[in-house]
Image (cartoon, rainbow, N blue to C red; front, side, top):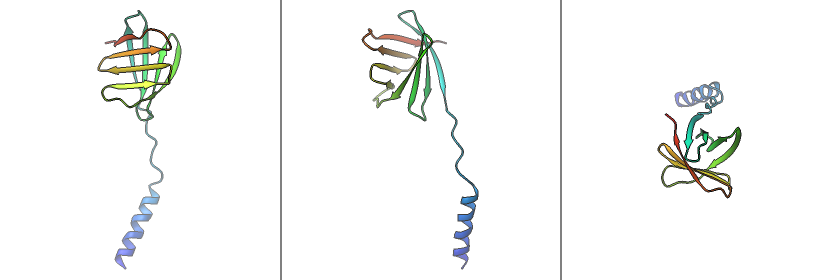
Amino acid sequence: MRTISFVALVMLVGCAAGPPQEESTGERRVRFTCTNGEDLEMRFFPAQGVAVLVRGGETVELQQQPSGSGFWYSNGPNTVRGKGREITVEIGRMAPFTCTAAS
């Protein structure tokens, strides 16, 4: 009888706790200075597997891709790969350019 009462109590306590709290967005913003003279920003949302490239006032959402080392985000024509403080940005048919995180 005690086992059944204990199990019932555990179930009631679990139900009373309610749904889990939403996680924060965990957004991380990093500004970069690039070899082509541009400054841009990356906004990383690791919990969602998404990053947003902010370049010239325009935003482009990129999905996280499997990477053996560092990180890789892409939506097809736009790709950002990085490791440490450096990223390589590929936009459409433009030549790729390298950027370094600003201090």
